[in-house]
Image (cartoon, rainbow over all chains, first blue to last red; front, side, top):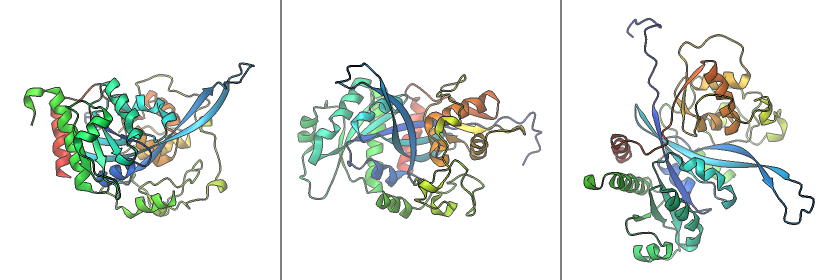
Length: 198
Length: 162
């Protein structure tokens, strides 16, 4: 390439990363969705946490520490030379809530994957994103053998406001997952700049 | 576990995927515990899956000399992008740090470093803190606020193009 010497050569630009959270109950299809759109095979990273636990019958007041490992699955989509999008699945178990704060920090938005057979498993996610002010869409993952509900029924059951989009999805289908993400980012843009909605 | 590995394995990796310089004969680093994370390198990386008890074990914080967070430097988010400095100096580094500077010749996120090297996130953050302090790697600060409109629009266009 050009023979610029190393002293004057500018440092290579570092891409900017943006993050979308894929939330939902255990078995709702989070990792399936990530795998459907990710350009890499989903990766799993681990956080080792030391938790202090206080037993209810611990009369000595002794603090027990246990080490817990939380796995986070994620995928990547290179948007262009300057932007990389990461999709992070939330840990399935509720006791790993502490990871959600880190996930939510700076997140562009979230997809709440709902399984209509166990709709209550995504209540926590809806609550969390509402409280944190993270824009989200609800994607109703179609499972074989599950009853098909109308959007209004899901909206009422989840008690989400009218502006939160609710879409039907099939986490195994790439096109369907793309539509969910398009819906989310459109929703985020609309929330940012109501006049420019489209 | 195995069924999901199979599912991961069935997917083909995207272009440019995987750390540079890895070959089928690549040997796992000494601390690798061989738990068979579904990375895109897969079995071709020469890692025998499921041999967890046989490998040498290093307790995570041994690598960091007991530290659980970086001493100084910028906050390292899950998606903070790290790249190895162009003018990387020859010097003695811990094997894990050496692995990181090799991996980061292409810009890569903190979470990916952790996943690909199979080192817990907290430990990666500490190791990166040292590398940053020594000027071996550079990072781009992650945003803590919603990205600009033009970034959002680019993301939207990018997803549509998939």
